[in-house]
Length: 276
Image (cartoon, helix red, strand yellow):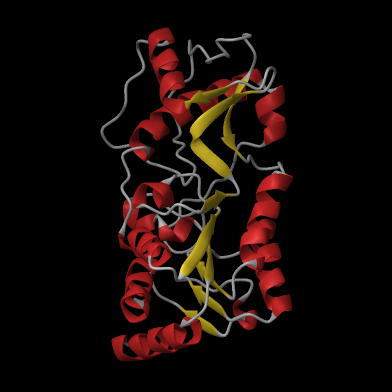
């Protein structure tokens, strides 16, 4: 697609969305320009052996590996900054165009960009929960516990990140896994692992946001995850305009009014300029 063709399609999308309340569904592709790689598409790092909830709960060695890699990755992950796509959506929300954002990401970049109505359907890296007593911790406090219990651990200058903030550590030998400081129970980051379901309250909140909207944009998601497809299906059933912005084809391209095979950091600021 040439620049002229892309500009024409962006203009068509803006015309379609003008005067409507727009719900956003975002995926890993919106954060790639912040240095967080996507799971899928060109340049993505394949996760051959992702952590499942079953392994996390039942395998102490796997859990230890997760916490070593998760800590090293989180330190670098937390340094990522919102990019032009995140900022454009925050501006569109403050301008009354965007009704809210449903994100599959756990990076918190929408909130840091200034968006206020954000539903993190897959959870967030900011919190850690005790699976025994339910106590919730700030991830920064757990990081302090990890580094106090494992003074040898160091943060590499160049960490190969996964979309969930994980890295593959060189070793887990001797690592002391953090525990709940209230009851000593098992801790788990407040993110949806492979094999887990999206909590019902989060999905219902996403459905409610969508019902209150009269158009939908999918930005940076290939819609491989079923929760995303289910939401787009609800928009399709209502017959509201659907715009998809993603470099790669998605499972819902045939449902879309307009598809834009381009970067979210390019398209979303251009839509913002046309609508505000």
